[in-house]
Image 1 (tube, rainbow, N blue to C red):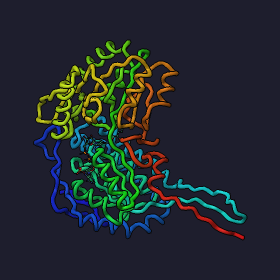
Image 2: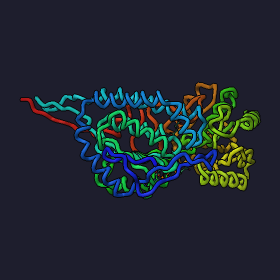
Image 3: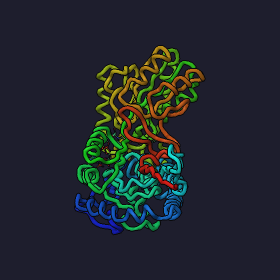
Image 4: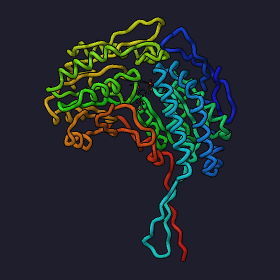
Length: 476
Ligand SMILES: NC(=O)C1=CN([C@@H]2O[C@H](COP(=O)(O)OP(=O)(O)OC[C@H]3O[C@@H](n4cnc5c(N)ncnc54)[C@H](OP(=O)(O)O)[C@@H]3O)[C@@H](O)[C@H]2O)C=CC1
Ligand SMILES: O=C(O)CCC(=O)C(=O)O
């Protein structure tokens, strides 16, 4: 049984989750303690008690801790990547890559910890100095999803600790193993008791207890739109700072002048890699009429060659869907797209040597942007192909969505690339690149229904994880 870390102690929970391999559902990866609301209370109190010590610790101490975590993640990337692939189902290469990305994030924020800066601004009054300073927000609750079970925790925990906050971390109940290893590494690196608390368990119990706890000052969440919206309301009721990263229905535009050698791999990657389980996945492929048929032919023939199977087999390109619930939901959307009049290519459940949640990638050709399958986030390896007449229609369809996380365009025209970068209503815009797969050191986030609050990652994370104080002093 893997335990929670509360107030510096590894503690049992009230019950436990059973973590199973989605590529081989008879294989149990481990049992993970689920905390109670009372244990969340103990963790929150410990985080509050630990806050002054950590907030006032030398930035070098915080930096050294984060660097030690980065080094351990790098040293153990193959072992952790294997565990991650086993519990979440992404391929070994993707899982090791995600572990390295987590290490790079910790290393980046090890640097940021010693670069916290303010402003000295001239006062409008004589002999008065004005200093704008950044202080920790306080106790932060970090609630993360299953699809990036080590990178998303890393991009919340590392800035939280770098800027002097104390942490309550709740990973997804479905994928606690990578989060648990990361927590052990943070503990072993010498993090003081109460500064970092791991509280595993279900969202309805542990997540709810964190988001309503009076000692928690701020909540950073990544996950679904309904839960995110609920957290925004709860945060407002409790006057907590909140940051939400939610869904996407990300468009990839392919213009007549696109290079198919760039566009097809970009769409294969953006739509189907990581089994389509990325909030940045390309799920609406908006293709200009002149290139449409050639693009669809080539995409469908290359899609059919993608090898779906056990993520530990290094020749496999697409691992299983994460859970039975998610697979059934994906299969429903495949049926919906067909019933709505799209021509469905692929998308069926697949049998492999072991019993798992395997699904063939799917294209919904001749889709329209009005179809449910083009409007709702599926979160599986499924992409609608929508034909348009010209750039203006492509842009209008791309922006016609409640979401606004990432978007992309494949074109050889500087004019259209530039126009798309400026007019796309998304937080992240890609030119001749997949909509998914972002750098770790630049801002991450979206607009409209995709995100709420300030940006994550890179130097922009300082906005969420610090509070600004303006200090006036009279020296006359
Ligand atoms: N934008 C993104 O990056 C992601 C989007 N999604 C979208 O969400 C859908 C469902 O995925 P899922 O993981 O179930 O997403 P959820 O939003 O349900 O879960 C995300 C996190 O929030 C927790 N949570 C759930 N309910 C509450 C609550 N009431 N209060 C506080 N925390 C809560 C979850 O806990 P628990 O683990 O117990 O459920 C998990 O840790 C996907 O199909 C996809 O559309 C999913 C993952 C990432
Ligand atoms: O595309 C990426 O690299 C990140 C995607 C992501 O953060 C997510 O799906 O939650």
